[in-house]
Length: 209
Image (tube, rainbow, N blue to C red; front, side):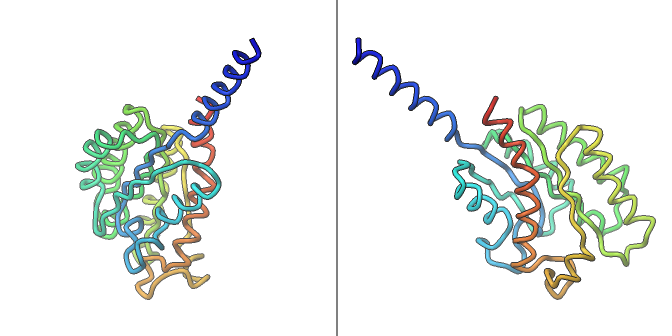
């Protein structure tokens, strides 16, 4: 009887450890900001994020699907294959910047594509976090304001985790490369901190499901 109880307790503990150590799969669908343009790949915020989460015993594999120059149209085209291949329980959308730099229609193109990617990810069973990309101020107050508001509206509509930052603040803190658009290595550390603080709740939800 004692042996049976001991075996039962051992199995229970092992089962609990397996549950807590369940691997999370996150796909970062983005552009040069995620791909790590101008810095080493291990300095990009998705790489730093994976290392920091694993260091605190959150077992996560981050698929960095960032491609420099990519647009929301490119992301929409690539997403179905990423969802099929990796079956992520978290999708982090970081797209729209290149669309905005090209002056594309916010409602007809950028927001529409992001909306489709959000719905596609949610339907696959993944949680979704969206990065509120900012445009440089030289694109005009009206366009940049509507662009920023777009991410807030999408997050509100689908009750998503919104990750925001400030280009002006990044520039002031010397966290940007010379082009004023891409973060330097320290800038990626700053982005990673913000992303990590926002997605921890989503990972907790998955652990307790």
